[in-house]
Image 1 (cartoon, helix red, strand yellow):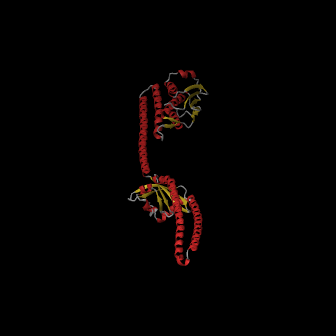
Image 2: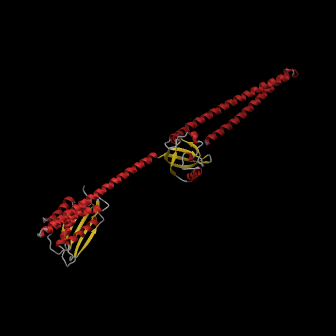
Image 3: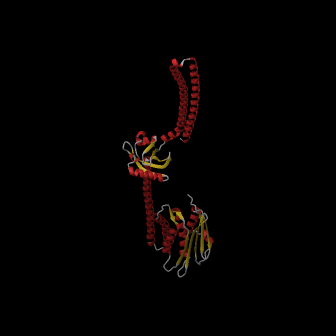
Length: 431
């Protein structure tokens, strides 16, 4: 716009100079011609007879000739000006056409407003969304399409947009037919021709809100389904635990009916093994996580239950429990629990005695990518370590089976102020 005004001023100044020079030249030539013509006329004619009329005719003719040349020149100048103006107008239209097309075809509604909230320009999308024509918008204010505003709050909103960077608002617009729909509006202020205006962009968010509501409903349904499954799994773990306790009670009843001490001891160990597995289901049932268990809490409770079952009140036992903060799956907890059960029961039955200080060390630590289990007692009985590899007891067979075929680890027995067992296996569980 500024370049166009400068060019127009330059064209005007040139036309004035050219026209002035041509007017002077034509006027001087006309006067010289008229002077020669009058001189010749006065020499050859009597002024008293035909002078005034003839002079008047000559003056009119010469003036007409001068005016013809001047007007003809002015007409050509005006035609050139008109052609230049049309060329500039056509170039401006070609230059502005992409911008106007982009504004009108934009998905968002675009409004230009004054600081008092009056519409100055709207694009075609605005007309389609609101139902009004561009001519109707010229006499409308922001509160005409947004019922949440009145005349005063509309002005306050324009000032807020002016003074706020990245201004944004979710509101509702009212169409010409009276329907209400949600929109997200963003706006900013700008200056044009030394005046301040507001440019606002509005987008229909009806589909977005519908999608959000649908997603919310789906999430609620999924959460409800998940809660139901968690309740079902907890109930399953609870029933498995109860069934195992029933089996344990049946074994206990059977043991009480027998007088055979070996049979009673076998039933007692079977009950203890069942309790080791039932304890895992109890933790899953009572815990928040249905897939994994905190190893420290599980081992602590397991050792306490084993002590109560196998240690008399006269036997003093200190337990050195050192377990890293590890999380195991239910399957691995059962595997580790069964190993600890067999080793702890063996120490409680054969290594510890009354009236002495007994010590049981249980260390479960993570070392690099492996898990190390170290169990040691302070028993003073002579034990052939090699015989532990060959012993055909159920307990040792169970330990070797779990370590070799389920944990894929290694087991080592040695004498260290008592019997010590070291088991190492990969931390990563095989599926």
